[in-house]
Amino acid sequence: MKKLILVLCVICLTLPVFGQIRALSNVFPSLDAEQKVAVFSKDGLALSSKEGKLFLNPVSAGLNITEGILRRNFPYVTEYLIVLPFKNVRLVDIYNAFGRIRDLKGRLYHSATKGEDIPLFEDATRIISDKKTTPIPDPDKVSFTPRSETIFIKLKDSNFGNSFYRAEIATTQSSIICTLTNFRSLNFFFIPVIKENSFSAQLYVEPVNEGILIYSVAGTDVSDFVAKYVDMNSAIKKRLDVLNAWMVDGIK
Image (cartoon, rainbow, N blue to C red; front, top):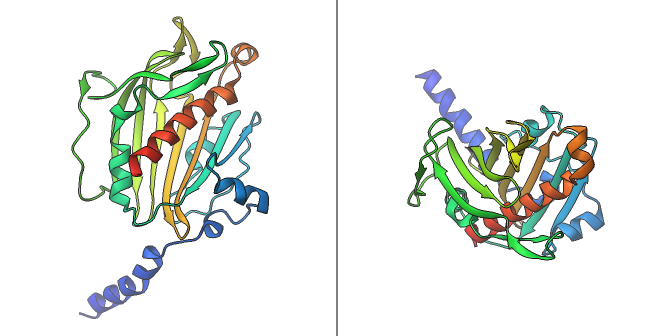
């Protein structure tokens, strides 16, 4: 009985901490005044590095936000941070937005070589697994968020053709993170450009006092030969831009 009372006391003491909504300054305490202005702008704050450096250092609240990128030692890294002035958005709404894979189809980016806006992903669908790539429909919306989930995705990329990703989603009482990793190589005209498991993107979403915080960070590793001909940070940013727009539209 004493043990039960002790457990209940611990739960009562900890629930307010876990349920507390943080402010932007609690999540990113190192932002300067100029960066804060950018975070609340329509374009957000974007930073890139060719030395694998992260400029933004989020403070975790139950999820290790940058571990998946840092432990890979990617030389090319891009970060993106924005706070949307949305109120009364529930975590389950954000989770359901992550589930709308087919909505990635047809989203535009500006192609410098073609001088026009073209779809980055000509097709987008869930697939059964990394072994069986049969397309399956997106699920219906749910009313609760599972603690973790792994799904598999096939994207018809305008640059890399058919590309395959593993998406791992994890949730806490106050945030959601989705880690996207290629489980097959990304090819350009059948030539491998990015080897399997050499590209990873993380989308972290947390309701904060000021609205909905979205922090995206992505990294990749390519050969020196490829890096001479492809602006990797630009390629990463284009994909982050599309992923972020998809995320924003999903939770509006």
